[in-house]
Every structure is written in C-alpha cells, then in structure tokens.
Image (cartoon, rainbow, N blue to C red; front, side, top):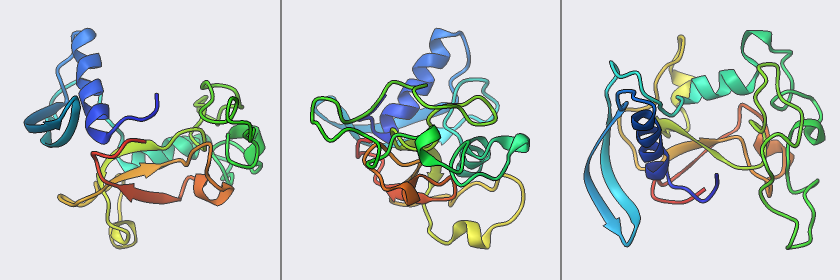
Length: 178
C-alpha cells in the first residue's frame, strides 16, 4: 500500500481489527477532512485493546534489524541493498516500470519480513523528535507525547541507499501521503 497518510494507517488498523473481531487500539475523535482526506484528528491509544496498531519506532527498528536473530547488517537483511531493497539505483528509470514493487520481490530479513528497507516508507506511531533516542534509554521507549510530525522509516524505491538503513529516521506531517 502506498500514498496513505498516517491517519489512513491508524484508521486501517482499526478497520482490520473490527473485521477480525478485535477491540480497536485507536480512539479517533475530532476528525477534520478536506474531501475524503483526513487533515487532522485526535488519536489516542487504548492500550488494553487487542487490535492492530502501528509499531513504535523502536519496534519497527527491532523488526527491521532481524530481532534477536540479527547479523547486524547495514540494511534490513543484508549488507548489500540490492539483495533486500528497491531503491533509486536498482529501480528501472522507465516511467512505466519504475516505482513501488510488489512485496516479496527481494529476500526477507532474519525474521522473514520483506521490504523493511526500500520500496515504500513506513509509518510509525511515534511523534518525531530528532534527538529523542539520543536522550531516551531503555527498552522500547515511546516517542514524545506531542509534536507536529510523525516518524516514517525504511526509505522507498526512489531513495538513496543511505536512507534505507534501519537506523535512518525522518519525519513528515501525519496528513501527508507516503
């Protein structure tokens, strides 16, 4: 899936939870829209829920790095980006064939997860603060309580290889599509 906002991602998590008879993880209120697009909303967690949710940045990075099975690769599953990722350097330049690829076209990481590096940027739950993880220690610290931008990880098919490393993190507004 591509071209979704952070709001689309949390709404999808709730819809999938409902479809499978699980309790929604997100409580979404104060929704503002322009046409069909949500431009703002208040989204809080129901931590006692068993429904689907976005990973925190730490959870995303743990999965991208292969969890406890990690070989500390440069990218999610290999030291060679071409083994595991679609990026600008191995994606065709022809407009008809360049762009997002079907998941699974490259090898998986140690946990069996495909496309954690490259292909499409992936939304995380956390608000972004460039210095947060330098300041915060411990297992799975949650990002800042508030902010303007959410974190996206993993890079995309038009990224340079240095943007697809598991440690790379950028931010964008939750109403922007990725």
